[in-house]
Image (cartoon, rainbow, N blue to C red; front, side):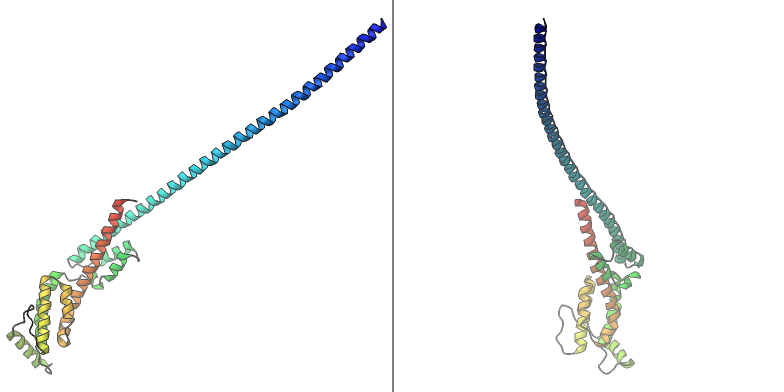
Length: 269
């Protein structure tokens, strides 16, 4: 009986040993399988995380590019708006100035306004600098100059006819007499002569022709050839004429530059 019992106990122990060994084997296999699965899962998670980070980085780069583009467009828009406002201010000031100068009225306020709108640099600022200071009180128009030239022309001819060495009152009277009795030369057929009076009379005739046609600049060019007393008596008219010539040149440049500014605005940024 004790033998049977011993044998039974031995078999039970063997069975337990087998079960323990198998349990350990299965547990070991399961641990290896679990660790392998865990490593695979971690690798997949890491890969997905890297891919998400790459997509996020690409998305952020795209957003940054869009933001930079929007900022650039905003800056262009701001510059365009600023340029538009300045162009309108300059154009309005230039128009007001031209309206005054073209009719010979004083333009001190308008000059100051255009200087302020245009600034100290640029084409318009340079053109404003060409306008004579007399413009503040008014520059004679072409019509004014044509009217005043008639009187200046008469006095100029009288000065030209004063005999040499007779600068006193009697010389002036003789000049008036000779100017009244002589016929002015035709500006289209000037006589050839070495006589200073005849040469001067011819210059005055040519200048009058240009004045009558409205070409003040050409008239001034010829008056610059005068000498002596005749040049002196014509100087006031010539100064007024030069002011008008400078004014017309400046206005031409200002109007052209304003047209270019507004053309750029029409084309847009």
